[in-house]
Image (cartoon, rainbow, N blue to C red; front, side):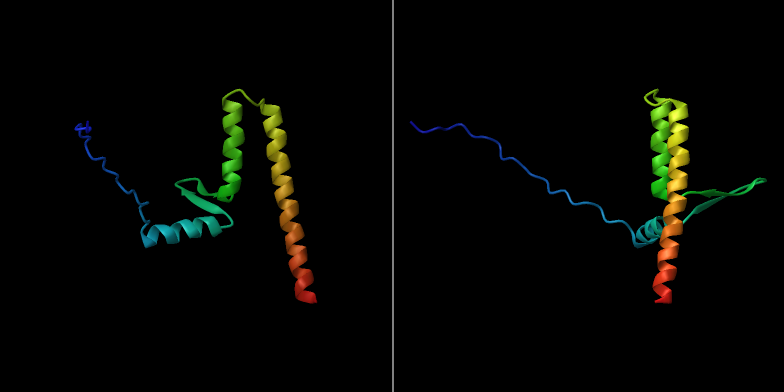
Length: 103
């Protein structure tokens, strides 16, 4: 005996990621390549922000403090240590570049 029950055909929708406009790609690349971000605040002047990856680190540590997972003294030590490590890394890279230029 043949199976006469019919099933509805299934439709599959192919999803393609949306392409960013060229201006958005250029702006995103400029932000990623920027050493520092500056925000102009009226009556206060320019506010210098760290690079996006460093800003994400500080935001993550701040979120951990806000959720009570990390105590503020430990967050302070992490922040200061990160700043010192970043400055030391920048100095080491600069000295390495100068040594390469001399040779």
